[in-house]
Length: 319
Ligand SMILES: C[S@@+](CC[C@H](N)C(=O)[O-])C[C@H]1O[C@@H](n2cnc3c(N)ncnc32)[C@H](O)[C@@H]1O
Image 1 (cartoon, rainbow, N blue to C red):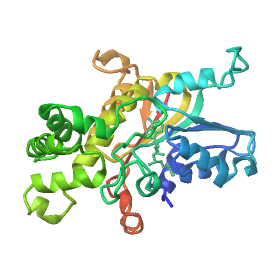
Image 2 (image 1 turned 90 degrees about the vertical axis):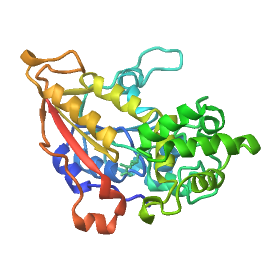
Image 3 (image 1 turned 90 degrees about the horizontal axis):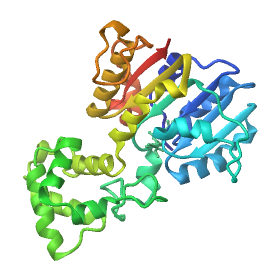
């Protein structure tokens, strides 16, 4: 079972109150969601979004949302980057006649990446320790590129760039070269095939054994095929359309590129209008930063949930 990271800290900073409207944009196993739902009950509204259809189905069947004493729980299979559209389209009848629109929210949580369930059970190749088809998409219902398609069709330079940019993999070029050589003999369609190729490309002493040689390449492919940074950027640009004044936003990231993006956007949003720049959205004095430094897990949490080791939470309050 996926253990929610920084649970106490998330609830403290988002401070959900009875009757408020809260969104969990990355529902996962619902660990954070359940605590939020308890706090906004009985008159609150909860919107849970996840890009993985199985996640939404599991939440519906395991957690029996109806058993919560809450005015409304809405569960949507979708991309958090499309939250403005989800809010306004929600409740439209199939003929497109508008029934109602969800208001802007009092709070939003985004807990990036994948859940332990997806790693262990999705069968989509998120883990290099499982022999599975190399897919890695959160949303398999769309006609988008799989990891296998990228690995078997991209040229050597593009593959190396992906491994370097999204995985900070030192041996990106060697690995890309080996992939291109090996795929001529046999297409690389399953995780273990890719792991074998990576192992043959990197030195035996890879990272002095501290991490598995496939860790960074798998991370890079996952981030690339799901356009994880693009989704995050789209969400950040649209926060004003999703959150009402005095609304709180918390984002938990596990990767330095994501954390940097969040940090820079939040800073721009908090900057007084006078010194606004054209570079990113905000600079409008439209938010207050609630976390001077990112909040990280305590040693105790890291001991009981190693996944929390790289978690960084940043939060703002809209003005
Ligand atoms: C770390 S898990 C969330 C765990 C959750 N907070 C909990 O306590 O169980 C991240 C979830 O975000 C989902 N996800 C990833 N990218 C997404 C996106 N762009 N839109 C919506 N959901 C996304 C994944 O499918 C996964 O279920």
